[in-house]
Structure formats: C-alpha cells, structure tokens
Length: 424
Image 1 (tube, rainbow, N blue to C red):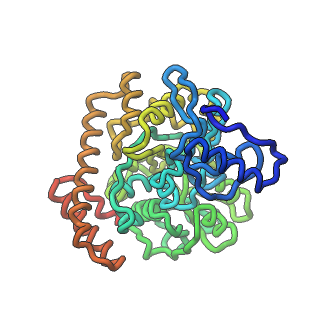
Image 2 (image 1 turned 30 degrees about the vertical axis):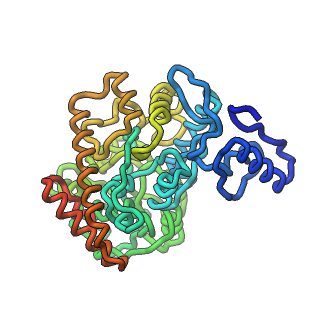
C-alpha cells in the first residue's frame, strides 16, 4: 500500500474478508479505525475510517490541500442540503479524486455530534449551528454547552431556508389561519421548532395556539401531512420532500408572510435575528412573481475552531472556483455564490481558512472584520460564563439547564449584547 491511500479489493470479495482487509491496512498506516457497518463495493474502505484520520492527501493543486476522503454531515437524504452536498461531491471526485461522504443526520444534535466527535470534517446544516454556539435549546445540557463554531460559507438561494408548508385542503391561507391546526414538532430539532415558533409569532401565535404533532425527524414530518396526521410542517421552500405533498391528494400551499407589516417582521426577528425578509421564487407552487417569506443561510457550512485550516481554505476555494459547474445541479445550489455571502451580517465567526480565501479575493472588508471580531467576542463571553458555571452546576438535568440559561443570560446582559432570550 502506498503512503497516498488504500488500494481497494475487488467488489466480489466476501464482506468479512473486506473488513479484515480494511482493518489490516488501516493498522499498518497508523490510522484510527472505528467499528461501523461497511457498505457495498468501491467505497467500503472509507466507511470504516474516522473522518479525523486522513487516508492520504491529494497532491496540492493551486493551493488545494484535501484528504482523499472528506465527510460532511447534512440533513437527511432527499433534502436540498443533502442534494447540494452530493453535487459538490461529484466535482470533488471528478476533478480532485476526493471522495465526499455525506452523512445524513435526522436532527440538529446528530449533525453536530458527528462534527464534534471528528467523524465528519464539516456540517452543512441550518440554525442549529447558532444554537450550538449559544449553548441553548438542545445544546444547554452538560455534554454540550456553547461550542466554538466557525462558518465557512452560507447559501442564500432564490428559495427560502424555512417557511410553513401546508396541505392545501387545510385551508391555511395566512399564518393567522394556523390557529387550531395540526403542526409537526420534530423531536431533537430545536432549530426547526424554534423557527416554527418565530413564524407563528408573525401572527401573534405560539405553539399553544396550534395542535402539536410530534414526529421523529424531518422526513417524518412530511409523512405526517401525507397521512393526514398533520396540516403543516416547516422546511425550505424548495425542499424536495414537499414535491410529495404537492403530488398528493391533499395538495401543497405556502402561506405568505407579507413584508408590509413592520410589527410582524419585528416579532419574527426578535426571536431569530439572523432571519431576514426575503422574496422566494424557487419551490413547488410558488408564484412567478415570488412569495414574501423569511430566510436565513441554508445550508450553512460550518466547522469548529479546531477544524483544519488548509482543508477549510481548500473547500471554500473549490466551492468558489467550480460554482458554475454545480449551481444548477441541485435545488438551491445557486445560493452559494460569493455575491450573497453577507459577511457583514453574520452571527457566527468565520473559520481562519475561509477568511484567508476571502482576503485573497477582496471580500474581507473592514466591516466584515469588525463583525467577525464581535462574534468572536460573543463566543468568548459564552465560554467564560460556561467555565464559571460548571464547577457548582446542579446535577439534575432540568435544574442544570435552567441554572445555565440564567447564568448565560446574566453574562450576555452584563456585556450589553443580544441575549436571544426570546428564542428559548
């Protein structure tokens, strides 16, 4: 075996021999091996390796420095984020001989848990990255707390990151019509559920005003509509699973959130300050003139402060260089364009590798640098509050969470920065 990586055995080799092959080669190379089910043919060897352990690196090409295998976590198969990652993976394989493994995570915690554990290099998710930075919602537990998340790139597409998708036969013509209707609540997905709460606030509604239907994952929320267990679910305007709703006997409708109601907009943004009014054109049933909704970055590609700098730089460079090749390859992929990065409005600090590339391309303005410094300072406040809180923290889970949120609120208020208290 060369130092550059593995030579794969023939696809007809029995599975137990393939596993032995992988384990032996990995041990000789000094790589960390995790016990995990291996899948068929060609890519068997990559499934057994920790993402943190490179299987050899790709020879540098104009500053590109990547391992032979990269891994991202993303929303489940069939979603826009997953499809976009697969489209980019095709370019990585074709142009750089890099395999991109896209690991679907059905909820917020699972997508970021694989990132923190080093099983993936980056995560292409949504607002869960903000909640992880803040140490709130599902990340307020002792095993989480505020995380040093770093952004690489944001996708602001012609679609939208999250809105209410309803069954047409439920007669929901506006957000106000959601009162008393059945709304899916995705277990383990605070970003989705909190976004729903923010959009309900547009019409001065809360979760108490709707019938909550608990489901086990994003795709399960679509199934709930199809099976007439729910009337509405939340998701991106162009999310492929909504095509199933459109094609079903129930039909699909997206209620508008008009932008001429300043108070309603303020209620949404008080809860989610990284959401902005947006005109969506891309998605089933959307009118040609567009639909007034809200949006945020989706997918939002993130790593941690410990993520490899060269890998972050190379990833951003490839996504910029090959944009024209993948922009039409998956729904919403055009939103990765550099012209829509909104560096001066970010709520997360950027990774140093991404910043290096932004500087090379004249994108890193003084305003972007100032916002980045502000976001780093916010993370430092949260980290200091967490470190001060832990030694005397309660053992009980609920008591721990309540005490942490109180300590967090106190620290942010003392620093005079936004608390996101309305998001809890």
